[in-house]
Amino acid sequence: MSTERIPSASPSVSRLIDELNKLPGVGPKSAQRLAYYVIRLPAEEAHSLVEAIMAVKEKIIFCSVCQNMTDTDPCPICDDSRRDRSQICVVEEPLDVLALERTHCHRGLYHVLHGVISPMNGIGPEDLRMKELLPRLEDGLVQEVIIATNPTLEGEATAMYIQRQIANLKVKVTHLARGLPVGGDLEYADELTLSRAFRSRSEL
Amino acid sequence: MVKPRVYRSQALVLKSAPMGEAGLLVTLYTRDAGKLKAVVRGARRPTSKMVGHLEPLNMVEMSLARSRPGGIDTITQIQILESFSSLKADLDAVSRGIYLAELVDGFGAEGSPNQELYSLLVETLQFLNGSSDADSTLRYFELHLLKCSGFMPQLYRCVECREELSPGKHLFSPDVGGTLCLKCTPPGARVMRLSVQTLKVLRFIDRASLEELSMLRINAGLAVEIKNLLSVALKYWLDREIHSKTFIEHLEHSQKAGV
Image (cartoon, helix red, strand yellow):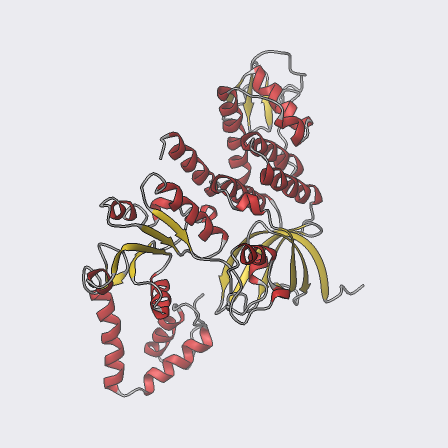
């Protein structure tokens, strides 16, 4: 959606508003607010913002091992000798790596698919970074593949597809548990979540 | 009479897409109002109590708040009636379920109730949820989808000369709306050959129930002919590719290749 040009704004301001409006989650009003914030910024801060944007555009590449976005190849996680090379956690997006890293639970490596199989939108396995995963499992070092796709219909379909692809290899395939969120409420839980939470209950 | 602001509806979730910061735009096929797009505010927040109920291929009962004219209604309460969990636990079955949803999304019209189509979708999903004979179930759905959307191909007479078809070979063309006798070939229409067995099976799918159809054994060559014929007809009326069919074929292909 493009903003209506504000008659009183100068062409350069209108252009900035239009550009900001292209960002996800930024509507026309927010774009105007951000544009006027940028106008009031000291010149060095504005330069620093431009440089930061250009730096990611020029430096960010995909890690040749885990396919995560990085500015060094291999990425710091794949390059870290302390990480457990027998476990690979498969995630949908680079942001999922950040979320899992914050938990400090996974000490192994990652594999980023950059999407999820979405048959209705015409996104198949060949559109994801799926084929890069299989060669990683063939050297015998990897003992376990932890599939951490989102618990959605498409995430589950992707998980089942990966499981089917690597079923012939002697690698354990696990899946993150499904259950109730912290602070959740049984009364409002859907029956699928609740039944899965019940099935994977654990001893206190 | 003024329509009440809040109303209830039974529906099948077809698909959903992110909307705004944390909202979800859900496409549903409702029993009483046809296809409907509705928004759920805050559904993508971890504390949302509704998101699990909004998964595609869930049959749900919900309350909606009507928007002002031209706006999108908001789902305020939702509960699952049937989640088709065995279907969702199997990759092949779930890919077929998504295929049904894509077809209903394509053929269903907003604001145009079609209870027959709703029942067909629910019945087919229930059948796929517990049955192994998936191929003939899909063919049943495809033909009956055309039927209840008003695009049923003529299978008993020649669409050109209106003569009743005699036993033997015939032609089929979705462009002119069904079967043709060998004498009639309208200029410019794409025509496919139609064997007498294919015609008989198509007529049987038209009359039979899903249970009756599941008892029928069709040889592989005939099954391919029927599949291609229906696929051409669906594509003709939908006027676009059916994306999820590609994934079903990918799975079938990789299974044959032993991957």
